[in-house]
Amino acid sequence: MAQQISDAVPPALRTVTVDAAKSLGPMKALRGVNSGPLPWSDRPAVERLSDEVEVSDRTGYRSLGADASAGYRQANVDLVRIHDNYGTGDIYANFQGTRLMADGTVVPASSLNALVMFPNLAADPSHPANYNFGPTDRLMKSIYDIGGRALFRIGASAGERSGVPNAFTTESDFEHYADIARHVVLHYNKGWNQGFHYNVKYWEVLNEPDGRFDPLKYYKLYGKLAAAVKSADRDALIGGPALMFTHNGPDYRESFLKYLRANRLPLDFWTFHDYNVDAADPYLYVRLGEDMRKLLDSHGFQKTSIIMSEWNVLGINPELLTLGGRAAFTASAIIYMQDSPIDDQTFYMAPNLFGEDGKTSNKMGQALIVLGKMKDTPIRLSVQGADTYGFAVQAGKSADGQAINIIISNYEVPASLRGPRPTGDRIEGGGYAINLLPRRAITYERNDGFDLRVTGLEANKLYRVERYRISDVWDYRLLSTVTVKGSALKISQILAPPSIELVSISVSSSQ
Image (tube, rainbow, N blue to C red; front, side, top):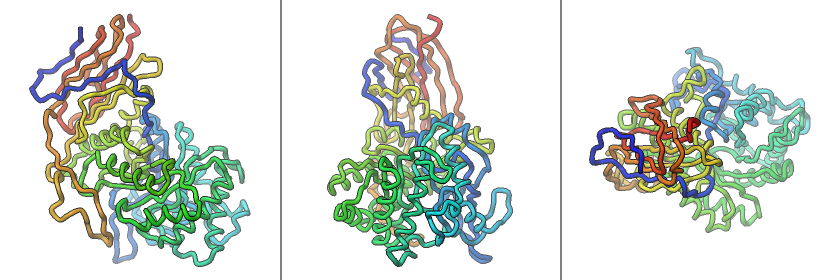
């Protein structure tokens, strides 16, 4: 007989079934982020280019000056893309203008240039003294200290103005830069120059070159860097192109892939970015992943993995999408990625999500913590009752079968963002034109909560059942704890969107 834990049950609950006896194999981890856990180098809310010109930062993030290692551990972050640490993690950079710091002071942006790994781009790459590894060493240590691993973006953070590789004019320019990168790989993977043996797997070539760089120069630099990385560590993987515009080809899509095939260059992983412009649809990433898979397969890259190395739901008016809504969007998106061609992801970004002390998370950080619970229950279970419109469900059990975690994320796309765009799927502005996937026509039914049935439990065992919730009303908190016995469990609850519910089931110690 099923054990029931219920509120008053309205007629619009979603029936959800989890079969604890039906395993679907291991889950993808999908616990990656951009930057941190050390605080990035004073990212400004406003960049002052001159006395007359200021450029607002599109994210509005400011450095909190906190080490977020505690928050990263809570979220079980396992992959950190080294990007936008502003000097730290950059091979070379030329930041200009001034920076408005979190404490209100204004400092020269050139102070960030002192943090790069190779401060004098013209220097000899073979001389250890020409490297400044200290800041990046500390960042790398913070990543591996939390049990994570690095996705190392070769290049520089956004906003720098060195012009690499557009400024390169000779073959030796490309080879010189590649030789620097080779020594970076040797430092972090082979111990060169008082280095380490981190065995960094992923080496990504530049960031969003399709928004800034001559494509043929990118192709050439990619080829040189691929050879350099592989010569330093034959087990390292090389990838890119970290697309800003996923459907603005062909230069950084079809033409790039044809160049790689013609020149027999490796593409171990393919990276792209998307910020859900004018859609706020968490299932969009599944559609993008499917498009990327078809693109790669059609050009003979069937074995190339896919990593979405930047994503978020930025640019949507807070009146349309609250912080709780963004948390539920993030949870639903990551759950949907389990059934997509996306092999891994690094959310942009995370150091700002865990508070001024690095361990007091906001709702977005809380969503990552809930998703991180799946590390303890990595064997995926069969789920029925979810949809692709925002009501996402994920369930897993531990290797010993003693624990089950179920995440229910109830998210709704804002009404004004459903259905076709009135002006079409090409948006122009800010010097860019972006081709977007068409928006979906979406209607919602039975979305007030869930009627959860967990079957396949062992009849003779006691189970401790805990429920946690995140919403606009609730910060991540424990709602209830009960102990039940039986082969099936029923939980019926109102869960108005946007909300996230974690149901944690474990074998009770008091049998």
